[in-house]
Length: 210
Image (cartoon, rainbow, N blue to C red):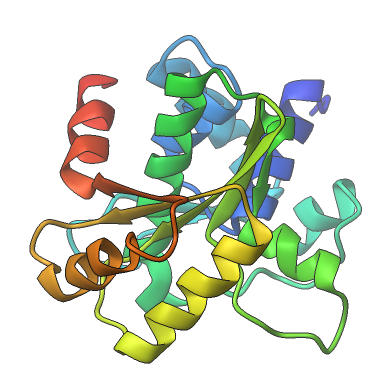
């Protein structure tokens, strides 16, 4: 097959988000519709640049790079390791990223993923990083998607670090995670850069994009 610029874009986006659903690739790569997206993904699978697997019941197929795909865009040759326990969270992060890209008119270049942030930290350095960050109007926003409970102390440390490092920290939280919401709302008294989004708002918006 002849590899196009869009093909390289698809592979690059899958790599930096680790794994993507076909709906995510549609928006990240600028396809006009889902059918065209799926046709191109099928060609990339047949050429062995990407793989498609269903890991969890009720969760759509996940696309990830093969060693051949990684080699093509020069990001190593090891096969991507998919953490099954992270799939739901990672898909929600991608939904959230596309939401903000659409709502704030962000380019792909203005968004940096958690994987990229860890790469920038360098080998051997492992500390908490937001799910992604983006820049808009000379401000840097960090985005944290919290689906499961964390200890209060861990949350407070992350909030403090985000306050020191970023202009705005956005937290996307399900309405049922009342403990997380309580900590965030209490922290607003001390940190004035916290913004809270209901996960339902993101989900409703993405469902309308279908």
